[in-house]
Amino acid sequence: MKIFLHKYFKGDTVIWVITLILLSLSLLTVYSFVPILVKIEGGTPFKYLFKHLVYVLLALLTMVWVHKKDPVFFSKFARFSFYVAIALLIFTFFFGTKVNEAGRWIKIPFVGLTFQSSDFAKLVLIVYVSKLLVKKKDVLNSWKEGFWPIMFPIIVICGLIVKDNLSTAVIVFAISFTLLFIGKVPFGKLFSLIGGGALLLSMVVALHLAVPSLNLLPRYETWENRILNRMDETKDIVENAQSLNAELAIYNGGFFGQGVGDGKLKEYIPEAYADFYYASFVEEFGTISSLILILAYLILLYRIIRIALKSDKLFETYMLLGIGILILSQASVNMLVCTGIFPVTGQNMPLLAMGGSGLIMTCLALGIVQSVAYTQQKKNEKPAINEDVLTTED
Image 1 (tube, rainbow, N blue to C red):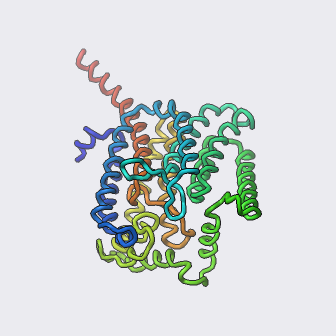
Image 2: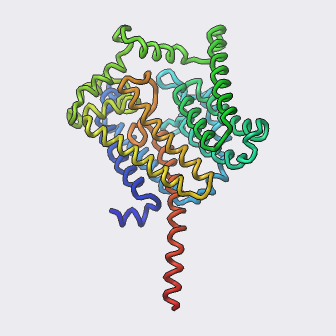
Image 3: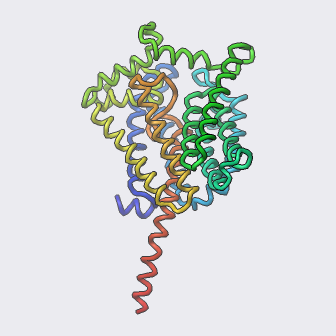
């Protein structure tokens, strides 16, 4: 297997192995976790398994294609990709297909598949902010020339996402803030950013409550109910049903799980195959397996950080650190929601949950990581080749 990976899959072998294992596991778990979807939308588990298989193959092909690109390619197209992301988000804002009362998806004509524009936007923003941090590194003390040009894309992307997806907007903003901190943006400006962001959000909420007809935040009541339900455990059990069922599923899993396909609570947990993936996983595979899963994500993060710090280009370092934090934060939020620590929100498990755009974008992000790793690999191989040539000539 190692020879096969070295021949066709360049870059970090450990990342390839973890990615392939998780993608394979996703096929098994999605097939097992979709009974609730079959009840609601009809069809058979095989229908959803086949659809997920198509997405897995597309995601893997995307990763393979991207990882052969020179990292300079991503820097060159960062600005163009940013404009495309804005266009997609604006289109989604007005014409997005609604799922669970949230208009986050674009329906792809003729094929019947959907694409979540925010999945593309958050990856693009990480790449673009990384590029701007390098470009503006000598003028970061200047509000006009350094700070605001970097902040503008963050504000625009988060502002367009927040209407229908608060949790994603918060995660994207937090990752961007972390990149600014790593990029040595002055603390005074970072604290001003936090204060300004909190003030702006408060003003928008106040305007939404004062003039409901504007419908600035159509999901505000949903956010409010989720937070209040999480804070008040004495509320009606129906209002906390999602969270309680997820926690009960984890409890039922025990150390070794109920067995693949034998979980019972997955039939009552909404989106057991996505937003509540971790709860369904623990119920069937057990706590021990869940710890192994957490370890796999931590190893993935470690390998990404290792590649990032080995790079001699700041753009690559910033970009990879942002990607690593993004993947781990999504997995962490899913786990924290399922264990009842966070309010209910929609964040899937990377590489495992059913969903097309999220899966493809995660593999695209990992392809970017592997492209940097492959570039480093080629640099390390060159001296060895030259040494062999010299030895032959002697």
